[in-house]
Image (cartoon, rainbow, N blue to C red; front, side, top):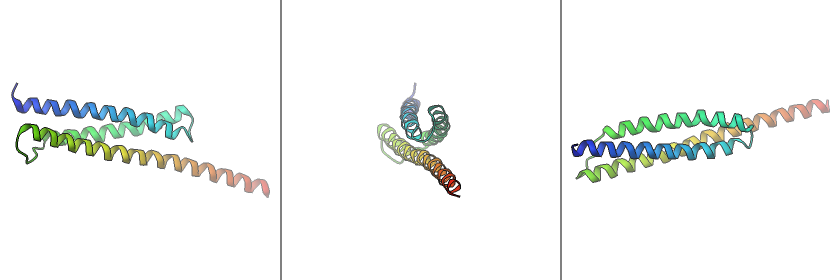
Length: 125
């Protein structure tokens, strides 16, 4: 096997593994975040949907990054540079996904408060 193919496979295996691990962490933390306002099955379903979007986005970026040849010297530097970019993209994607989950939670919380307020106002009338 030539060295270019080997580096390509190493990058893909590392990237897919990192994406899967971050996805598991995201699913767990996202579900516990949403369970503050939703029942466990509903929180799990919403988190699963958002996590699928995270995986698709991250794996798509990984596919693009794996084809780009960074302007560095040597194959090892190329792999390290690409892995660094993958880690930065995963970190940004993770943070963005948590923001999305938090907005879902806050939107639901706001709707519950509006409903409680409306009910209280009706009861006073």
